[in-house]
Image (cartoon, rainbow, N blue to C red):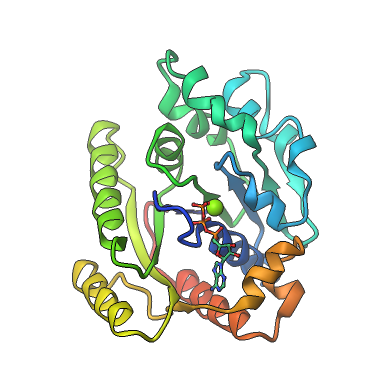
Length: 256
Ligand SMILES: Nc1ncnc2c1ncn2[C@@H]1O[C@H](COP(=O)(O)OP(=O)(O)OP(=O)(O)O)[C@@H](O)[C@H]1O
Ligand SMILES: [Mg+2]
């Protein structure tokens, strides 16, 4: 069972878009996939057409309520083979509510300990490197970092590398790696190309060959609560995400 988290503290770097659509692509290939949303914005569930505000219990209850089980929070989606654990804004209280719990960083890891029956577990994470993201890092082995190719993008990458190193050391989590850095919202400008070169220099061999360019169908699909495959499977956006999903599928094993 592979565990892959999409992480970047920067908002709007395409974490949700890629986690949902890569998860859906794998599911359409016949893989059994579980998508977990760890962002209080709840957009992974929304992208799949679920009305997350009313969905209780969700990932917040899973982590905070010892009696809440995975079976209670795993829900089917319109995509065959793809299940989801949704979140909503209740999750914003997690860092405060869990602050005094000694196992606050491992709440998710503990609840996922007995998980089986899936080929892939995919995590969407919030735009911060706080307690929720640490819970994600302790529950995954592979981290994919989508990077919006703007001037400050590299600052965000440096932060993530530092956080991953800190988590590995402090929690003795040896099987945690940044496996891929994905350029997103690519436009053919000199600045974007310069940032791309810097990214490749920072992450040799780990920068995705596929850069995700801007394609309005990707945005539109989300506004309809559909994956790109259901909404515009023929589009350039779908082709780019498929190319990336194939790269991710072919990555070598980490801690499996
Ligand atoms: N390739 C693309 N072309 C056009 N629009 C895109 C593309 N990728 C993502 N978007 C749009 O950009 C916005 C931000 O993407 P997304 O929500 O995936 O980022 P995020 O990293 O999850 O953001 P947050 O940190 O707030 O959770 C969304 O409206 C999405 O539809
Ligand atoms: Mg998001």
